[in-house]
Length: 204
Image (cartoon, rainbow, N blue to C red; front, side, top):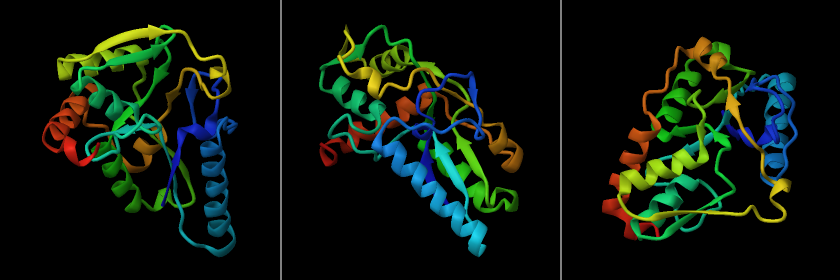
């Protein structure tokens, strides 16, 4: 089972992103993930090694790294808010993202390991609900009850890596495993914040 990423889709032009949609990654990270997918499926098709590709959207939750902003932004923003800092949002922050809590990801993965129909398949894992970036940041600020928001211009080269709105179709995952996401964004942010209130010194 391989944890891939929605980053393999790149800039999405259509609406709901299905697994059959075009793969045009904009970053080295996305390119590496797509190349790895090809390897796994080649070994399945040529040698019968059971493989399942899981394309995760925007994961977050306790125990993620929060030393910098290169990975999950929710954890990084929670840290900034806890430290009373200003969280910068590029542009108006209206781009859509699908944020999914770590427990929901793990449950989906476990269900896929038990589903014969998942073998040899590529499957999206997301909450199935897209949230505006600015609303995600406001959720963090409201939960932590600290920090500020500042809207700033986009960097000059943002168009090289910005993927735009994304809404992921998770109907295939639900059909194969009967999985349903259980943790809303608000509840997930609260759980993550509660964890770092206790363990922050271990992650900075």
